[in-house]
Length: 458
Image 1 (cartoon, rainbow, N blue to C red):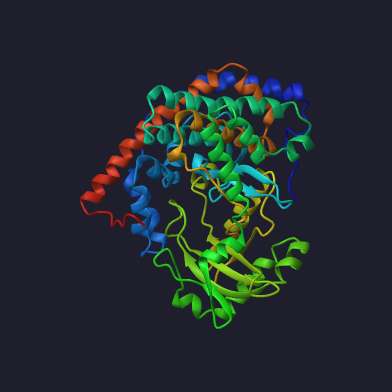
Image 2: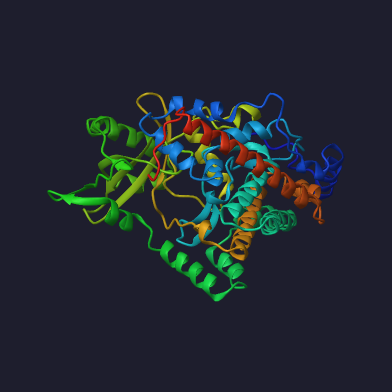
């Protein structure tokens, strides 16, 4: 049984007092500090080391995607930032971290009740840790995205401050809520649209279109694009190299069925009853994301009542979180279990088919729906005011996830009502974005020298 947190029965006044007291240990402006540690690891070597445990035919695609811009490099270099954050001052205020809270890891998805929610949506690196780590990861990503979009330094800072201010102000609201009120709180798509309404009509129309599109993104839509009927049976359509059948997978039908039932056993009883109404039909490898490229990822096609009742699940390899060397090993021995539990704790509502299993070679995996009304904004198409509104939404969603899992009253008291914390994080974000651009330059240099094989445009 998990122990009750030692602070759980402190009074709100005691929690606020402890939060304010921590300002003496770690002043809020101390979060502005960034300079590389004397023993900072070589960025290229650290990230190349991850390739050793990945599918070698896919690592050139990973580096091709990371080499597209400093922002895409940042998306794929969570391990590097974890090493950089580790020596920095810590308040001791813990939450369940996303672990990779850059702005592209937020988006919309369906709750079990089919409401369209906006939330953090990637938990491969999730682990308990200092709340400021996620905030800094988000803030630096906004600076890089703003620069990628050609915005001015003033616009980039305004966007970053909007996210941190939103995080701080919403955390203050959650600090005043009752426990169940926090637990049941959520950010719905309508909240996002309401934030956008203060912008131009063109931006509003694009946002409404995105919400409408999200409602169509389900297994039926995915099956229409990704499968074909062959001899009366539905199967995945090969689209090499991003989606294709693999001989090793094709010849492992019995094993695949066994693994499917192992996964189903990790679901709640009612959801296991539902998933076992489906038959296993097909499996294929699918390349996804930026930082995940090269890890094992397959999609599984299931059939319900007939060929026109498909369900597509995604099975992703779960490795040790990049945070674990610096924050301690997860209490979950199974990395898939770690990912699923972290997601359920942070999200307002989670995929009903979240589960985990161990592969034939001992690797850990987690399962989820491939598409369940999932959608995200293409930040590259946003103007500065639009990205600022999106930044506010991300800050809000992150605060809600942290409030569910951590010491929200102490965190709110520590940050306070002024903008000292905001300004400190913004200073850090600019400095770390500069560092990321320098690291990106080293990667381009290594690619040019032939030290890193790259496939671009895939």
